[in-house]
Image 1 (cartoon, rainbow over the protein chains, first blue to last red):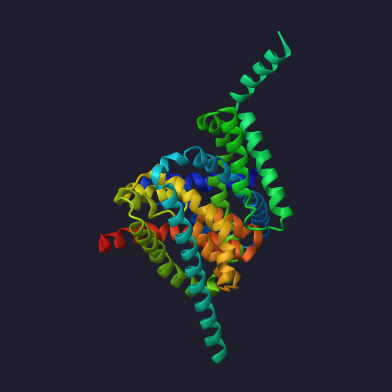
Image 2 (image 1 turned 90 degrees about the vertical axis):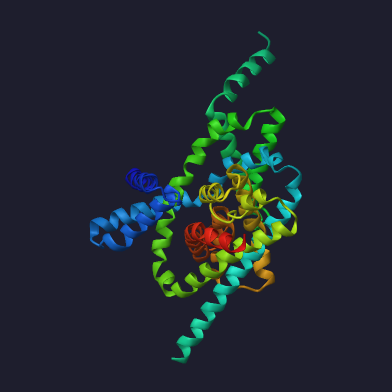
Amino acid sequence: MLRSLFIIFFFQLLGEAIQKFFEINIPGPVIGLILLLLVFIFFLKSSSQFKKIKKDISNTSHQIINYLSLLFVPIGVGVVMHINYLGDNLFKILAIIILGTLATLVFTAFVMEKIINLEKKNVKRR
Amino acid sequence: MSKEDKLYKIWVYLQAEPLFWITLTLGAFLVGDYLYKKSKLNPLVNPVAISILIVSTVLLTLDVSYDRYFNGAKFIHFMLGPATVALAIPIYEKKDLIFKEIKPIIFSILLGIPFAILITYYLASFFNLNQDIILTMIPRNVTAPIAMGIAELIGGIPSLTAIITIITGIVGASLGTFALNIFKIKDMSARGFGFGLASHGIGTARAMSKNKTAGVFAALAMGLSGIATSIFVIIILKIIL
């Protein structure tokens, strides 16, 4: 647990440092995610020692991700407390968010499902 | 000293300390999560939204400022970074499935991101919003820190973008399932991908809680759309403005 927490924190730290150094427009944690993923895919061979570390990190990560929802509560409370910042535009903005979000969600999922199905058909034909 | 005075003193002491606000947040979330599970994961009973409502009600009733609350809640907020890094693991564990669907993933990003940007732009223009509010809204589908960075870059108002982004996440997480069902989209990877692209982390949390494959594709879409949006926004705004 402690070792995997250290590794996760370390990769976030690495991500933050890279973000600051190269002044990239991607948040440090996302860079950390990419780095950790690359290390897992390319550098961790399946020797027994690495297997143990992998399993360790996997357990800890799943435990943290289980509570992903909880982590949005503090910033969400901020939204409620500052909702008046949206002023007279509040209802227009809410309408745009609802329409825009659902349209984007359905459009993206629709495109993806269509292409997945097309690929399946192609595989069958071969 | 009377009993009331003593209680008041204890309250004054406790409310100045982080512990009280951390405990309140955890308690509110346990209630929200309990109701969510009790409802058999009904998306409308969104645990984030319920917890936010409980905590906000307490703060407004007791007349506590957000700064005071966040002074404690920041310890929970802090874990958002490590949790983002931790998403590497479920993505890694489904890497074979992801490589298999690499073509659909690329196409969905290339079509989905411009769609997200343009629909926000045209809806906001349709509702006659000012240019600066439109620019503030445009990056709302990506995770808050990226969205705020983009807003700053294109001349929006980053703090407003943060608020709009969080609302977007909650709307996607609580209403997305119904929208997908109406259009009869069944594939779990496609559904998850839509959640992550349209409603970032909060949508991803919802997808994760419902289906592992959907959750992984949501996390993937969230990361990819953050990167792709930063690039596409600049190009698209150059063309339409």
